[in-house]
Image (cartoon, rainbow, N blue to C red):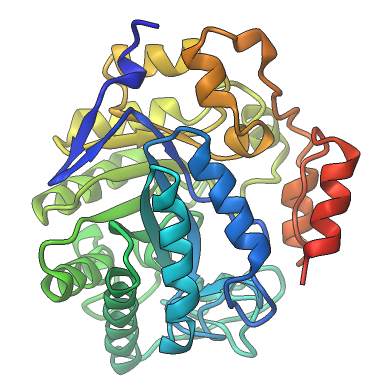
Length: 370
């Protein structure tokens, strides 16, 4: 197949074998307490074997439990998990994909925390987080640095800072969740200060090691971060030599709004966000959001809306998606049917499965879940 999707692409000094990546997707497959499990290794082995060039592993916490979205969020805050992380990186790379680990602090969405923290005391799902002190902000920045160094030591090819989904880095940028009156609040220049400080501190620590960014372009909330402001933030990331920007829209507070539920059923529903960010910067852009067909993926790249395609639930529903597209067998793709049962399971603290899978695969997953 003569396709730009299957051409090589460069991210700094790393060559990707094609334009397809696995976008991070939390499924609850780690052990209780965030340790790497056999089930998690099996999952990422399958994702890497799919033929994508880069696998971005779901968010790993930089601060457990204060920064953890759940008790099954992978941990990058402790050397106790280094062996597991190294196995995870090796498992992915053995299947011919580059390996990246996303690191995160969940902030006001930290379900594992007794007392969540955030830029400001803005309620989230009935819980009121405590506003961070300046000293705590500096401590969390160091937590990101320490976690990034573990990612590098574990043998991953790059690290991604999670500034999406309304987590802590995004909470600082958003005018909805950042009501601070110090140097970290107020103007966009102040609100973007903390994530830029984190990026610069991480880059100083890891040296010649690519650092990407999961990027919230629009919260899809009336009083939230909008595209015009986020594009200005994207330019600041580019100026700081970010390796790539992986664009997304929405947060846990907007995902289940009726209009967003309908929007998310449309193929390529986040592509316009990626295209807008790409117009603002000259660094590689990853587009995601139900890019369900090779035809659409090809068009996104060919029209210059993005440089790379991020596949999350699309790839999880059918790990043979890249090969079926390459061999022009798109009619055989098993598509995510937008039922959101997997997302609902995650929101309830359970592990996810796809209703499109055969029953025996689901049973095997349940039997192996720890």
